[in-house]
Length: 374
Image 1 (cartoon, rainbow, N blue to C red):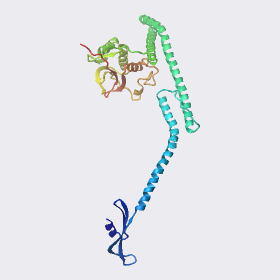
Image 2 (tube, helix red, strand yellow):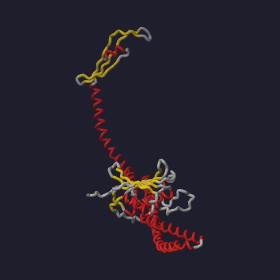
Image 3 (cartoon, rainbow, N blue to C red):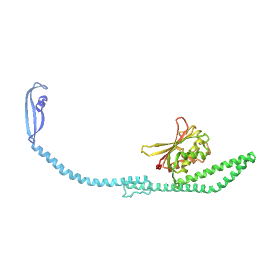
Image 4 (cartoon, rainbow, N blue to C red):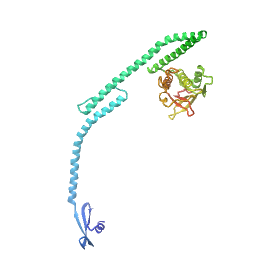
């Protein structure tokens, strides 16, 4: 290879060769005749020079040994202070991260110990001040929320007794309205109607107050879901063709009968009020991907459906889909109470629109039916 390289290059070539563990530098230089200032004529004669590189190898090995023996201890000596310095910087950052995670999980009394007077100490001071202000604000909000819940509960409770008397009086007035002059009869019926709405509002306020106070409880029993829905429709006289029921028999589930009755009644009543007849109530079982069967109750109406901008707020309390309405036909809490009752069962509820038109509410409750021994 060296010979071929020397013949190809008139300026010569060289190569390092190791033979029997000894390094050599081999130089090949071709001889030429000069034919002019720039031209040369090769003679095909190559001269070689071979020189041992033992001393150079010894020097290189000595340099490597010195670098290894000197640099590694130096690196170790420099690494220890570097680690200590890095730890002093990273520890406050780690504490800040842990404190932020702790506050994110709800422990608002979390604080960071302040050490020194550098920028990290200023950051710790700022974090502690912000955490203190946030804790104070959240406590004030919680106290205000508690006062609002207590106020709604107290007012609802105090209104129940006089409302009971008013309802009794309006029932008597309704019976005698036929013997009154037309204007007085209309006024009596208006008072009776508004008193009934006020009684519904008070009952709904008391119910929502129990949910807010975490005082609502489930009293479950194994029931026939189809029979429970059928009773709900019959008790409210929704068997005149306005409501269609598709209720397959034999579906048993552990439910709170009273709360399940409220869920179905609120959804069907809402569909009749704001949607359009006929309203269809469907009941079925579905299996989810994790293997837990769910009881699905679907209430669909034949109205215009729910506008897209209304859907995100459909379960909000006292939400009015039409801003021009000064008051709603119901209490404004029916769907919010429905949502809380479904959550209490560990289920979910969602609202949407059917492709052909009309709103649909779908309730999914995990099925915990006891197996029938027979």
